[in-house]
Every structure is written in C-alpha cells, then in structure tokens.
Image (cartoon, rainbow, N blue to C red; front, side, top):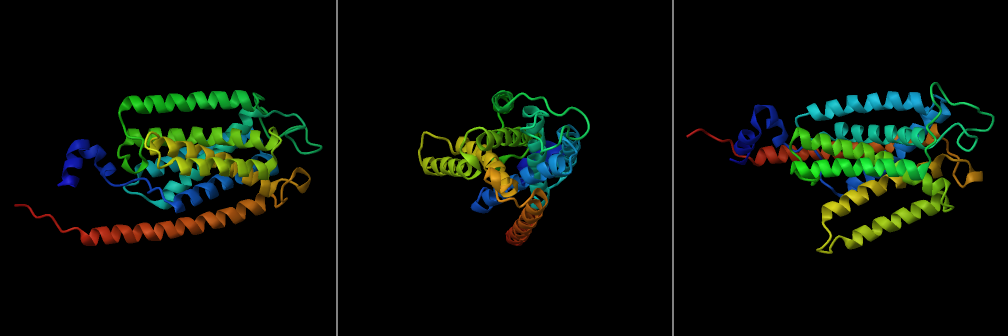
Length: 293
C-alpha cells in the first residue's frame, strides 16, 4: 500500500524517487567520505599543479565531469554506491580547483619554484581565503534557505524527489568547495600545519559526536556541520600526504597518493555495493506479492 500511495503522490514522472536513492549514514559512510574528499584534494592538485594544467582549465573540465556524473546519479532508479560516490568524488575534485582558482593567484607562494605561470587561462582570482570563504558560505546559506522554503526534508535517507536531490547535490558541491578553502587556510595560513589542522578538525568532529544526544540540537544540523568539516579534513590530510617534508608533509606526491586513495575508495565502494545488493535481495525476498482483489 505504501508503494502505491507514493506512486500516486509523485505521479509517473516522480515514481522512481519512491525508491531509496541516497545511502544510510553509518561509520562506513564517514570513512568513505573522508577517503573521497582526500582523494579529491590530491587529484585536483595532480591535474592543476603537477600536470600544470592550471586552475582555470582544470576547473572547467572537472565541472563538466561533475555534471555528467550527476546526470547519471539523477537518472538512476535506486541507490547505487558507485554512482553516488563518483558524484561525491567529482564534487570534491572540482571543489578543490574551484577553491584554488578563487583564492589563489600566480604569486610564488602558490607556484612551484621556477614556475611563473600555471596552465592556460587566468592564473587565479586571488581573492584570498577569507573573502572566498565568505562568498561560499553566503552561497551555501542561500541554498539551505531555498531548500527550507520548499518544505522538503534535509534528512538524506528521506530525500525522494528530483528537486530535493538537486538541492542536496548543490549543497554538496558548495560545501566541498568551502571545505577546501577552510582546509587550505588552516594548512597554509593558520600556523597549525597539516597535522595540527587535521587534529583540530578531528577534535571538532568529536565534539559534534558528543553533542548528538543533546535534545535541543537537531541531528540534521550536526550532520551538515560534520559533512562540511570532513572536507577540510580531507584537504589537510591530502596536503600532509603530498607536500614536501620541508613544509611538514610526507612527500608522497600527488600521483602516488591519488593512486593509493583511489584503490582504497574503490575497495570500500565495492564492499558497499555488495552490501546494498544483499539488502535489496533480502528485502525483495521478504515482500509478498500483491494480488488484485
């Protein structure tokens, strides 16, 4: 009866959204989120800096990749871990170069020694981290206010409409870009360094976890704060893996770090895909067929 009611509610065009399209929020979800955002940081730097494609060209290409992966996710009829986490990864990678393009410029501080330019097109807007973060925060607030006014739920597992999922992915792209700015600011300008910045963010995430039982604080609000914070965590961890030892990093390089992180993420997503397949099969086996009376 519930399935029939939901089909009647959304109509033929929206019937596919009666099926769960987004994942449950578990510990495995957060592990994959950190892995994807860290890979987004190292892969974005790989394309823009190591391969010297530049922030402008890389941002344009990666944004197109995001649109393609998003189209696949929106057209899917049920939750598919590969589709979902590919979009998360594409928003993290595009968010890295969007943030760099907004905040940085062609000064020696951001370019390798002996390099005077980086790729084709503008080298960067040079807005700086505070201005860039203010713009992105304002944009994220606009998205959430618009989302609130639609009356649609902020709870991921209950999002079941095209409009709701579109707002969700808009918030993801902007929050990942904002998180990159926050992470780069902590790593480059705060004086904490990569390890210190990562420990600070982990402490904040631990505080959010401790606040979860507090009745006056909605879990949805805590979730979105944690979701944003995992992006600067990925940015600082990514920089810690790739930057030279003289700057406090491990000097593993963007290529080696990205390859290892991609293998880790693929392994985690494969496990999630197998679990989701078993869940669907178990659910299908436990549902009795509906006969017309």
